[in-house]
Image (tube, rainbow, N blue to C red; front, side, top):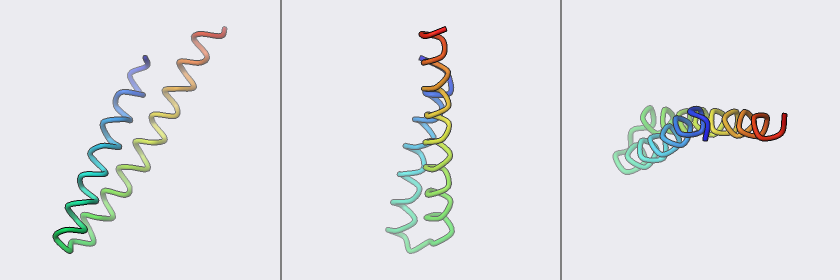
Length: 58
């Protein structure tokens, strides 16, 4: 598994937690940061998946 996939998954989880806390606390800035972290994590995870595919199918 590519390192980008692991890091992307962690950013996604971090973003979900941050977004949830932002909603619970009524902190719109934290909620927005969580959404951005989630999106960044998804993109990084996708890039890692592409790298894995390229390594398996040269």
